[in-house]
Length: 406
Ligand code: PLP
Image 1 (spheres, helix red, strand yellow):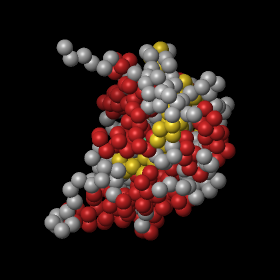
Image 2 (image 1 turned 120 degrees about the horizontal axis):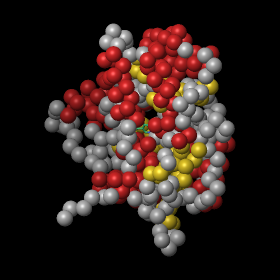
Image 3 (image 1 turned 45 degrees about the vertical axis):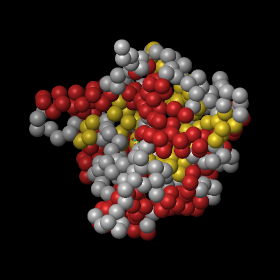
Image 4 (image 1 turned 180 degrees about the horizontal axis):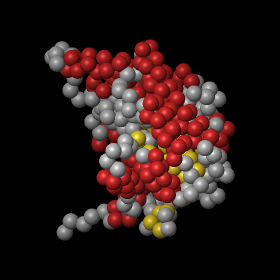
């Protein structure tokens, strides 16, 4: 008899986006003439930067000629891309990261989801609340949690990010082994300072723990005082893995390219307490289960680091940041407390009522779709997330409608 992995049965069905779709569909049916503006999802709307498109075209042409055709590439990614990343994203910021510590992949979603499998089933895992659900669900699937009760999985440590702590959780009061952090944060839009991040790095070093630092929204940081990578913090290479993505940086959500940095001195321990290189484990896992990102896509990602690419990427991010500023300012003027929207594409808004009631108000009165905050965890209750990924015209229009309606 073929038995299933029963951990999957513990997973709370994700009704969030299905529920949103159902309510939007009902609204549209009852109001066929009303135009809906979607500020809910975290998907980019601008096309790929021209430098990336050109590079991809050229690479496709290379694939059409026997002299330049490429079959399987290195599982970890082509050296040209790993070198560009190490040089531009890390060494230029004083972070001591080598190209062979970078693993190119087809997404930060897969990497943040898959990384947990190199760690013991019995480790204590700490996740933020509210949270990008991938961190939680993949640990549930692996069997690291008990059942879902009263909005939380038994056995996980939830790091509460609330207004009171400025959306930066306090250090856990009981020991944890694996810590997920995400800054700029999805969904709160909060950013973390060097001092705050250093506190987590110190904690991990003292407690032989490991930090999984999701920096998928790093490109939105404009404040020079904020860290652009966890490796700007002294000692972080010993205790942190960093995830980055070209998805939001350069509009690669449909093209798919990301990378994970696993420094060679990043350590975990076997059951005897002997140090083991996490780099070696991830390299083994990656080369066994992954066969590399396609050559044209890696060439397109490389173009992000060209002079033209840098200009175009910056212009695209500036565009979304303008939207974010408009949303934050105008919602603020209406009297709502807003977090994020600066150095981040997300604005986390205290709706002063139940998340779904506020969602319904925005939809029914203004024709605007947002994301109810409690879909991201208990601490999201009463909040909504508005995303800056849309056109400036639509964002302006959306704000006018909200101002009229509320
Ligand atoms: N990490 C965070 C925090 C995200 O919000 C997202 C996407 O929304 C991802 C990772 C996934 O990125 P990718 O498109 O590279 O899989």
